[in-house]
Every structure is written in C-alpha cells, then in structure tokens.
Image (cartoon, rainbow, N blue to C red; front, top):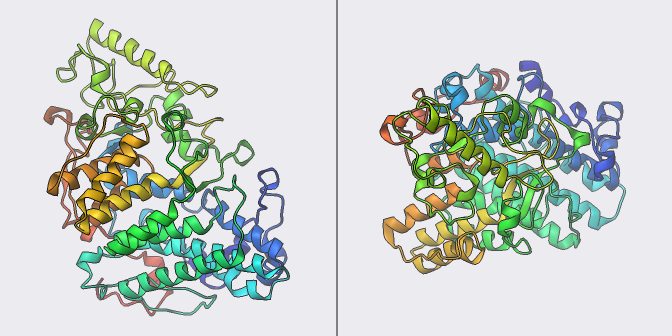
Length: 545
C-alpha cells in the first residue's frame, strides 16, 4: 500500500489509469498515459477532455489492491454511508459487516476500510492537479481550456468535500475551523505536507468552486446533455451547496442550491419508479453505466439492486429501509410504493413470527399457511411494481420487510448508471438552510415543492414549525435520498445518534446491529488518517484533530 500512496504523490495517477473519450462507444479506446507522459496526455484540449473522462472513469473503477467491491463511489455509498446509517439495513450480511455498520473501524489505521476513501479521493485530486498544471500550455481554443480547467477544479473540490466528511471533525466541533483539516494537495509536488486547518480546507473548496464557476461562464461551454458523468457549472454549484451546508454556511448553501438545480426539474413519479438505473431530468451528476463498461460483481447494482445478481438469484436481498422511518411516511406517497412495507399486506402479523422470520425479516419465511400466503402476496406486489423492459425484481431471492424496489439494473449482473447529485437534494438543502436561517415558511415551501408539486404525494401539506418541522425535513431527506450515499454523513453533521431497533422492539434491524451509536462517540464519527499516509508523509501532526 505504501508504494501505491508513493505513486499517488510522485506524479499524476493519470499514469496509472486508462484515459477515455467522451463517447460511450470508445470509452476505453485510448492508451494509458504511461506511454506518453502527463504533459503529452494534456498536450491538447482534446486529450485534456479525455483526461477528464478518465477521472470520471476512476469513480467506477475497481481498485484491485483493496479487493472486491472497492470500485469508487460504489464502495463509498455502501461502506461509508449506507451500512453505518440508521435506516439502510442489509440483514442477511449484517453480522459479518457489523463492524462497519457499528463504526468499529474508524481508528484501525492499518485497515483497508480506513484507507480506501483517502486513497480513492486523493487519486481524483492527483489526476485533477495534473490537468490543472498542464492545461494552460495545451493546444486548443481558450474556451476549451477554460472548460477543462473548470471541470478539473470541480472534480478536485468534489473530492476534498467528500474527504472532509470522513477524516475531519464536524464543523460545530472544530472551534470555528481551527481543528485538523486535510492535506491540501493543489499541485504536483510530492514532498511531505502538513494538515491545513478545517477552515483553510473549506476556503480551498470555496476558492476552487468560485474559480470553476467563473471559468464555466467564461467558456460558454457545457457538457453534452447525455454526459451526466462529466462536471458542468451545475455540478460546481451543487458541490458548493454541499460544502456550505456541512460548514453551516446556510446563506451560501441556499443560494448555491438554487443555482445548482436550474434546468434540472424534479422528475415525475413515472421517472422516480423507473429503476434509478438511467439518468432522468433531475440527475445533475452521476456515473456512466453501459454494458460495454460492465463492472461485473464489483458494481453497485450487482449487490444492491432489486433485480441484481445477488438479490434476484442469491437470496441476499438488496437492502431494506428502516421500519420506523418508512411507517412515518403516508401510504399514498409514490416513494413508499418502492418498499415492501406492512401497509401493503394488511391482515398479516409481522410480530409473532407466523408470517415473517424475526431474525432477518424475510417475508414468508415463517410458520405454515400464513407465511406462504404472505410470500405469494409479496411476490405479486414485486411483479406489479416491476419496471417495464427490465428483469423482474428478486425472482427466486428472498424479500424482506422494508425491502426496496428503488434500484434496478438494465443488464447482468449489475449494469446501471448511478446518481451522485440530484436536484431533489438541492431542494432539501434549501429546506434545511431556510430552517436554520429562521425562515420556516420557505422551508415549508421547499418540502411542498418536493413532495406535493412534484406529484410524489399530491395531498402533502406542511404547516409544521420548530422541532416538528426539523424532524420533517430530516425524514424526507432520508426517504428521498435513501440508498444514494448520504445517510451517515447527514447524521454526522446533524450531530444525531444512530438508533437501530430489532424486531422485538418494533424495528427491523438484525440483532448484531440493533444498537445505539451516540453522536458524541466513535472518535467524533471521524476516520483516522490511514497509517500508510502518516508513514509516507512525515510532516503530518498526529497530536490531535
């Protein structure tokens, strides 16, 4: 691993990756830059665009050193966000993954689980820095150089913003930003470098995004409409909104979220229920997905789509939503239709073991006729909700209480696009920012826009105030973005404990993860900087955060 991190900081990791072009058909039809060198790889604006596409490719590439499943955002979403959250349950494997669910690896600095996010996001940063170092000398139009530079800055800011979630304290714990931030690698230098403060880290993220937005506007260019995996000015505004809401800079979060979702209208119910495997009107940023780019068993959809290989043929399920959360959502909500909840199967007892297993929550794995009938009803519901043109969900696999019908794949074993940023998230940032700016009417209006105006629940109204309104904002953020890789970071910045209950206590968590993880525990919910980084970089101060 030390050699890998050495390579990261002794030159651009463009030399370790395959550059790809902007067209899906020849996505991998170029040589790695080892054969040419970084300056040649960014020697023209055409090549620089391919280098940007290469960064996008990193976000879905399996990093073999770390093992199966460590494939960019796939792993971040699953292991850093979904598993340790309150309301994403993966009961079949819960006992084996309980150290990740229960935040027991945060101080194990020699673990691949502690190291991966650091390695992955600094890989993106290293590639972006190579582009930024060389683009001004590239052959091509100045407008193209401006767009490339803006995109590289956006990628770098995206990576820094994500690293803050995992390796830094909450802003409210930071003494106004005086606590430990990140190693701010913003050029191709390779020597030792100390930590910036958290305030300096946010200042760099803001600076990158301010410059990126100015360059996007100056270039007059945009990505092709289908290139959801490439940054544009909306992505820059969205990353800005994320950084600001986490820094509790609510005025900036509000203004940036509004700008981010311009021209990305909220999707219809039909789009919402179309499997989250192809971009819709509100996907601001996501990953490329195509059969020619099949990531096989390392893709998100293989394990976490309701018609992916493991869920449909291997009996593992595909994740379930927390029982208490989903039961607080009205039954007529279009999003609730995507989960196997009790309201859909009236007349069955979900608490005595007659219709459902009470260890894992498997529907129809109980005692006798009632269990058989429930299995048939659940299977019929899954078939009724199946997305036209895609393989049916679960098929021979188990169905779980709260089991999801949100994520699908369109090719085996797990091929799909994945959303990273949607305009719904921006509406929710507006709601949260307005709440903390003491503008409750606009916070209510944002929830009404998301829930009623969109059609997700046409009957939705919101007159709640105070703590009840805040709980409503949190509930609908968890529902809307469930499974998309936000839940742990949200609870961290909200300073909110994770409380999972087992079946005996009215929840649906496996006993191995049915516990409370206090907000003030688990190293302030912060991963320690990996040992291989502190071994390599002798200027890091390990005295504290």
